[in-house]
Length: 454
Image 1 (tube, rainbow, N blue to C red):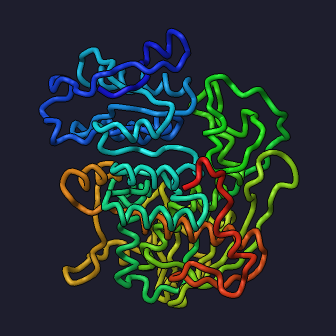
Image 2 (cartoon, helix red, strand yellow):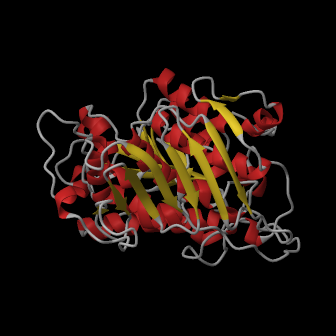
Image 3 (cartoon, one colour):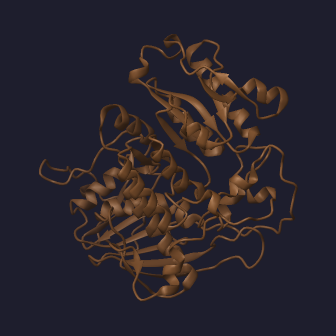
């Protein structure tokens, strides 16, 4: 028996009271998968992404069972417990109320019946929780971006390697579901269908500035100090954290640099990862970065707005990331280009065509190309959560392990540092240090409050 919070107790009293809850659920509830053939999962962070994506994907698979959930906000905790119970009741046609709840993730990590955890928290919590989770012997599915800083990302990747545990970064553009076009585009590029790769363009939006926001009383249901985690103390106001009355609205922390870098890591972690996949640079990074960005001059939300940044890699390939480019990844070679985005299939063009050919004009010769048996075949994996479960149960590789996730995130953070400094920066991707720039190197990490530090 492990200690947890009952959903009924939360709803009845609103208090955090630990009670005993069963850890063994009758096999009739979850079908024919014996406990030894099923991954037991704890979900940490029960907001928007967890509800509509991470927990939802786990619920699709009979060989995985969410047995516990955790959130620092007891409103979200109670709603998360209810959601899990209801989904299992609906999928089995039987009453179910066995989901345990925790307000302290360390207690969830101590539960011996939990094999693995979902980390679906704000960005600033990703790396610390991942380090603690693998240290506790748990496999991890961690939302992107991998970390708040490059130093944290390195600690996370090293901790995963030392632990021998499986960590999958939520770079779902790598999976055959729901967007197989990214795998196809990268395979075409890696096999020279557009000739020698010269340049990559990545389109990302910026974020709007926000209003001033007065201090508000901390809700009694929120452990705000723990929510701030490693970051500095700051007064509470609702648009700094998450909505108290909604799971659907975009939370305010996404637009605050204390907790993340904005769209450059938010969407950027996805698209830079795909760029690296096509470039064969998944374990490295650029050697030079520069660019500019506009930042709000007032208001609580302070992440970047309009921007344009550039990078050069050791093999001579250059990269531009900008909000004026179409959202997606465009690989440009000396014999053509390939553009890939979530909203459409792979598109391509022959450079011999007129220079004003529409972006989505298709060159079927490139797109219909067959990848031969002796060419590069990139790892083909199912949807990211299914791939993670298969890695735990069957020993297959994950498509986005910690080091690859770290390199994609660190490249995004390099672009962010270039925005902040406004100067050309030289980078050593092996040492993960700027060359001859102490001020830039000071931006590779941030001070951490001692009680929450990695």
